[in-house]
Length: 289
Image (cartoon, rainbow, N blue to C red; front, side, top):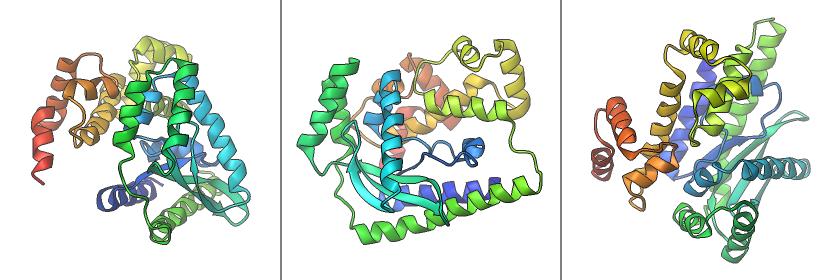
């Protein structure tokens, strides 16, 4: 199972690097969901405007509702283009196994209808107190790419659709063989962290959400992963920061805030400890490639 998940992530990263595609695996089937921690961070949108919106819990609820609407449309179409509740344009590709719906692949980061997109952003901002100027700026820097030629995009996504189907088949095979699925608490914890790592998380808040004592969760997670919870969280933040550092639109301090750090100096220290260089030097090295 892990090997297949690694191959899926490898292919998604290839599509990101070679074709500039932003890919997310969404609304995954309940049989796949217990294994979804193997597929992080690709079960959520990671563009700049979505990173900002994820800081608002009520906006996340709207996103979940939007996914349900997409699911309904997937019952009648195996692929289509649409604009989400926050104005982001995305191509949707349905994932199926025979007659069973498994979820959908989102290829996002487009703006075909600017007026419609900004109208939806303004409504989001008015309802939830999101600063429109910040969201609009991040949106513009996240959608400054041309729409891909659809048939070419469809050909690139097809192998990933098949990989997702094989992943589902592998899950069924494990269940038939009575092989235990991944630890339920570990999966719940990793999924929660993956969904919320850009927020200013604390161990007290995590333990309250998971309904376990802080001491138990810390010892349990270290036994399973060989690292502390906040070390794991900061690792995800730094991986996202590395992507954002490739864009000169944001300062190091702004990126630190976007990925969940409250202190730019602490972010720099964590980044240097993990990557061996400062964020500024890492940014310069990417421009030389």
